[in-house]
Length: 489
Image (tube, rainbow, N blue to C red; front, side):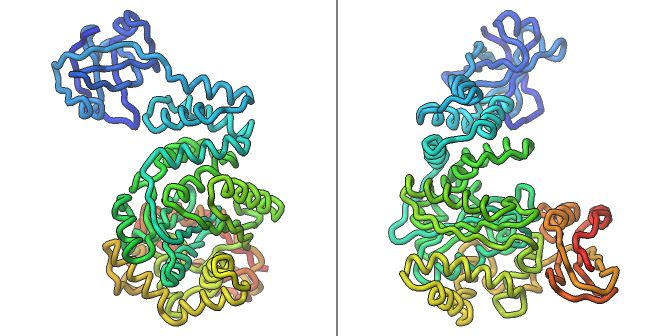
């Protein structure tokens, strides 16, 4: 059917077209159906909305993104056809009923996710089916490879290493020690990280305080070849691009199917040629992993998947009962990292960064863990690791001379004090994260928390437990209304 174009001054995450409801009936489609719009041999498949009056019977309303792709303007004539649902929906239905999916079926689902051919409800159904029925080892391998192949891949010569933390622990910025130490020892470390999903800061958010993180795949390769390491945002480089789309779908559902988490992590490692990956598995009453047995199960699954992909995985089950470091929120975490390199920051942040690095060094160098730990710490104490971090910052467009005090934090501050004498018996990492986010983190880079205490510390009434920062008085007030996360007994 030939129709005149009306460009609607709106945009959306999906391609959308609007037909008069009478026109929609004539082509046999209704709201939330699919239509193909064709102009000069180019086509777009769009989600169909219908209208009674705002679009005439001889018109098709197109949103700005559709108009841009097809180079349309008001009054242009296009052809509009009904479009059949993608075949991947049948594969999703199979998974809903507990059947195993083939490599081709999973590739079709991921391809349609990337192209936007699946409606949000259809893609969500795949997530829910994976949560309820699980993904077996074969399906997880197929999903990992499909995600890795959904974006650009980078090949490196030499030994390529990486790390990943399961997350859930605020302030856990050990990447800023692992990458510089390994790079200073001659290994290649193309670390691509996520932005925060539910935490006060992701590694990419923290690095962005001092340098660019939206690097292209070509820039990542050049910097790693020249400097040895990079700390970049994976989404900016179009690496494993399907992963960002799947995370966006999982986020509102708050679902993390184990097979999908495995594929999400390992696809990004596969896409940058990693051969060795050290995996941080924090365990705690409020962490993502609540028990050591759960952590060991995740470690086993990661190792089995790594074997199928040609990647050696080294697990490190760590303590996740309290925040790591003192800074929580992008700018405060970066301050903490730089201060720690000079001996003024967080001892636990340095110790964990060195320990997780040593776990990998022990395997690579075939030395006892004590020797590997000394090798890693020597890189820090000699200044070589800090110099490498600053070299990476400069390579990513930042100031290599940046000092902790140069990093701007929220102008509005409030100290939270101890209500009594006693010992810090518990720190709620979930409430810590919630407070920092209420304060504005990670969007407000200067928002967050500076911790003054750890579990086991003795305090007196009136001592500062932590200081809250924000760029907004209103957000600071909202953050202060959250229950105190620090228990003193």
